[in-house]
Image (cartoon, rainbow, N blue to C red; front, top):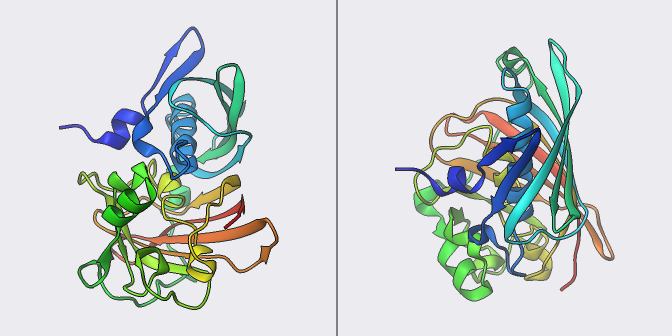
Length: 264
């Protein structure tokens, strides 16, 4: 049996042009596709251009909101190298560019070397001791993507009716609801899959992404991903959010920073 994420990030090539179908199954509260999902679709096309290498880092600029339906992807291999390669991907719909991604793919050995100064995961209750929030996010806020993901959040989270931690921070766990295991292709989606951390400080907000950069450190082990998201530099209308993901073995597998617009 196939998994939803794999089906909805399929890209096809014909005559040097790439195409995808953007699914409504990954919509956020505003009804548009989740930015991390669009990011993952663009990166799926980039990966096909340099199949011998793994994604190391990528930056996406979200030019305008995406929409459901057909998408064209213009893929350019900017540099093909033995150690690293750089690929640019422009995702377009209705002749308008929606997302522009520049990604670096590299020799798998770059992600297999031992880590000298690891960032340890914070100690939090396990998934079974946290609160499943997917139903609440999907039902109360109309977040379709929350039906595709199994979230476990600390009981005090404002996103599930608590008083919040007193700062713009989310700690919790995440995995696909249909049992698909995490991998490098999914990590750029997962760093953007939680609701905004700013909501823990000011209450429910929307924060459309302007720019998102992700660094992938290694292939994750099967099982839950532990997540920490925090926003520390908050200005009127703009917020930066950092995300960290650790796999079930306690290894840091991805970290990201994004800049978003925000309004109550």
